[in-house]
Length: 371
Ligand SMILES: Nc1ncnc2c1ncn2[C@@H]1O[C@H](COP(=O)(O)OP(=O)(O)OP(=O)(O)O)[C@@H](O)[C@H]1O
Ligand SMILES: [Mg+2]
Image 1 (tube, helix red, strand yellow):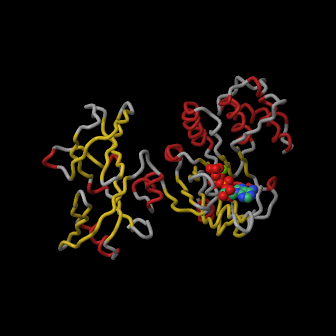
Image 2 (cartoon, helix red, strand yellow):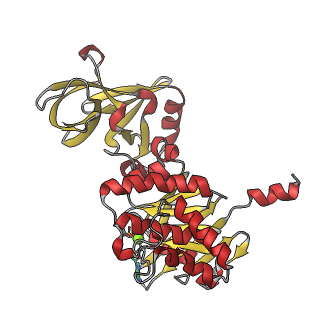
Image 3 (cartoon, helix red, strand yellow):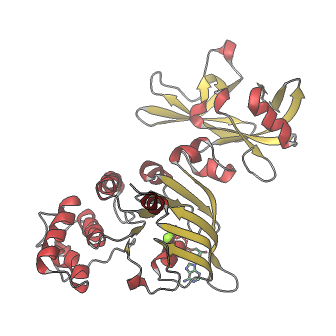
């Protein structure tokens, strides 16, 4: 392979630079987004309602005029191009497929507009229909199909045009919980087969974690963190991410820091822990004595009394089949713990707890950023 080819392959498919959208004097849809999406990547935009996910997708698709910044697709500036010239396919939440056309005609429609030959259209329709498993339904009209089947038609239609970029804005939100989980797996499988560079929007963190190569976490029109599912889970950039990713979310404890020789001691009204090594150095360098300790529910262990950091009374137990979520109260705050299903825990029971020390998270109490 020539170096020229290598260069081409490492070029991102999509580059957003300083992208912003202001709807009116008061409302910013997107304040600032900088992002590179690599070839064949499956990127998920995740964030609470109103954080700007749809606005960003609509700007990429050309359905919304940008206020600032640029959108580069395969090296070409498309910021001001009309949607039809962008080589982008979309499936949105309301995946309107044409009700009077058969599945076949729905999928073939865009290909006819592209003036593809009849035989090529036929081949492509059958190929994508097989991919999303609707090849038995090609002569049906949408009214004769379930929601999940209609959803697949919308996906097939978008895939048929073999876009440079595939945008999906909450495409599973109209489906019931069970079908969502099935379609989640199928979409991931379709992506693995087609390798189509994709951006997928959801506000469901578990959907994001299970599907994404990289997750873009957004809040108030800005990106808070970009990373793999492991990055955002194990190395959350701030308290917002730590609280948003994972169910139940991270537990937070305000603590005071004291230097103890090489080590530091973190004290909470109910417990004190000694931290050593590089964690201790980072905490010392942070320079603030009040900070927030983050502990994920599965990083709190039930231990024999002699090993315990603190003892608590069980408030509520939520059985989940393969595990139980145990809620306890510590200094007026509800703390959730994930415990295996062996040995049923009862409300009122006393538990002795300790933390998995190498997995603790520390946050600056003022900025909320990870230390
Ligand atoms: N056409 C519009 N005119 C004015 N403000 C808008 C318009 N569309 C969206 N907004 C505002 O822009 C912000 C971002 O909206 P957007 O639809 O992008 O959020 P979202 O992340 O997609 O939310 P959701 O998860 O609810 O779909 C919100 O405050 C919203 O009220
Ligand atoms: Mg939206």
